[in-house]
Image (cartoon, rainbow, N blue to C red; front, side, top):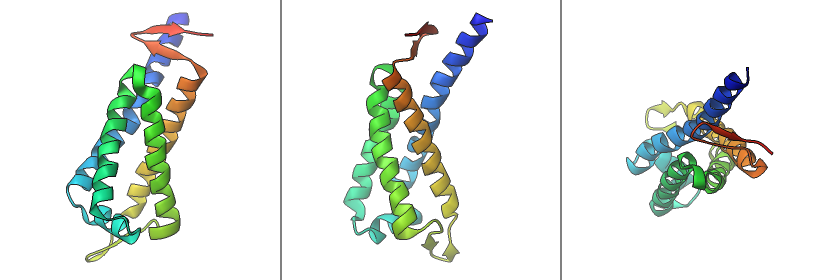
Length: 142
């Protein structure tokens, strides 16, 4: 029974770090690739291309830090700042449905992925602050 608990603890530890990392890495393709939705979001906020690329670099750093255990707390912090900014932009400035050429895009998908990345990063940060860390299958409890 105790062994099963350790396996679930290790799986949840890594799942919470891999999910936001994959979402952040995936969004890099849109930000670096001049995707219509990404360009629209940053021009609607008045930030422009330089800020879009700077945020993409910070997303890359956060995604790497999240899966590297000694730096996962800092990665979660960076991810929380970026995703909270993007959630605020989606909710109050550009909206969930994004107008692009030929109609509206699937903005709900972008909003949902940002929300999932925010929530999982929040869980990673909470887990790191609480001090429950699992390295290489070992479990260290308070």
